[in-house]
Length: 168
Image (cartoon, rainbow, N blue to C red; front, top):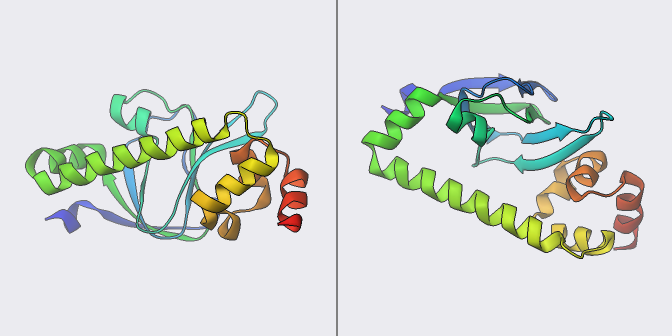
């Protein structure tokens, strides 16, 4: 039953899955590839908020839950193979399958923990400390994501990130 509710989706690199101000109607499971959640500043600069890789779920959660327009974009940054489940089907599974409800709870808890570590971990950190934190907690970002996107995630310039990486 679960398999019939998830629709396969193959995407190209840098494909936008959700536009800013669009209501999020899908939750994605990543079989292969990477999804980035990001916003843009008034000046048009990207600010990466979250990256999800194989074996993880990704969505614009506030919009998915409350069906209000998203305040972020969802983008694949690699050719990706995803499974997409609609909001209606997702909540139906949560309602009828305790195992799926448990998975959803674990996803929410893990997302909260990662967000808290990032928020509290970055307080008082200089650029070097931020990169060291990333190496410890999310090393796959440095291997698979462009310096520009990683720098926007850390809140530093790409040149500063390159300089620090060359010294480590």
